[in-house]
Image 1 (cartoon, helix red, strand yellow):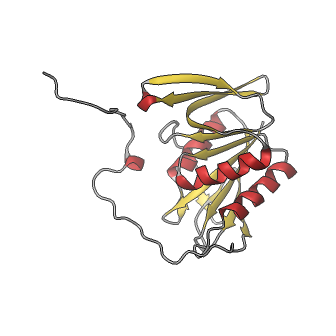
Image 2 (cartoon, rainbow, N blue to C red):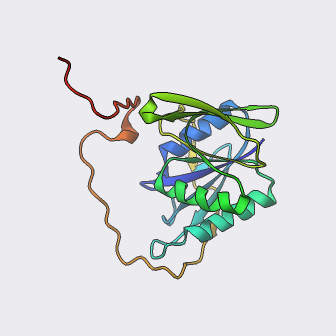
Length: 204
């Protein structure tokens, strides 16, 4: 099945969430390519054995709709059926736009998926991980948002060999960007994530 992974950039490199999804796609031997979205000038995101396309956007405008339109165009031209992204703000926005273009509902909080007889089935986590449910997708396109740490990282050699597509600015300008400083343990650095849920009390 032709598969597209929507990638992200962190500190001028491809994100760990992108590499986790790529690891799953490789284990399933899917026909995979990656489209990474970012605003860095020359990120190190080229993949030694997977086609990589870089869609470069500007930080000065909110142009995710134009990015999504470009991705949808590639999906239709190359007959891609499975679209994967991390459960991040950017990927959620892009998948939402793309789902409208393709008339296919996305599935979020996916912790595993498989392919049987040309159809994608998913395992999803709900209620803070307390419950799991399975779904089978019958639409022409499958759009999945993958939870962090669902899969192992793909082992790849990164380079600067990739195609770059520039996206025009939108009419909505960004006047300021505030990045909150992080402290303490970070979710993306953890090997295991445990969801404790709400309403925890001390044992009597």
